[in-house]
Amino acid sequence: IRGAIPNCDVGKLTKLRYLNLESNKLVGPLPTGLCNLNSITSMNLGRNEINGGILTCNDGSLSTLSEFGLSYNQLTGNI
Image 1 (cartoon, rainbow, N blue to C red):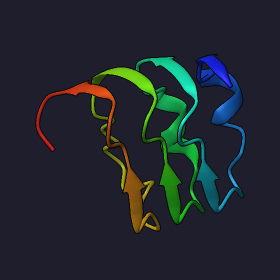
Image 2 (tube, one colour):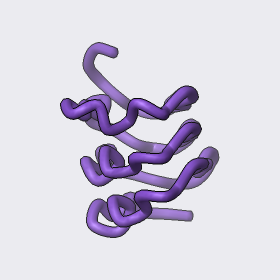
Image 3 (cartoon, rainbow, N blue to C red):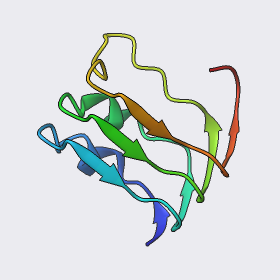
Image 4 (cartoon, rainbow, N blue to C red):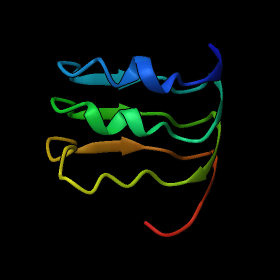
């Protein structure tokens, strides 16, 4: 898979529990729509070309997330 993660589309997957997009050619920042994944427990976006800051969801919407893989990207900022 190549390109950016579409912000408007990913935010509609509110029942999604597992997302593994490791080792693709994803580029650009993490979309804020990821904060709408209220049921997500595992997300792996490692080994891509994602850049920018690490996603911040202020409302606790990712409270079910127990695994979050972002290794081997070009992210900046604090965890």
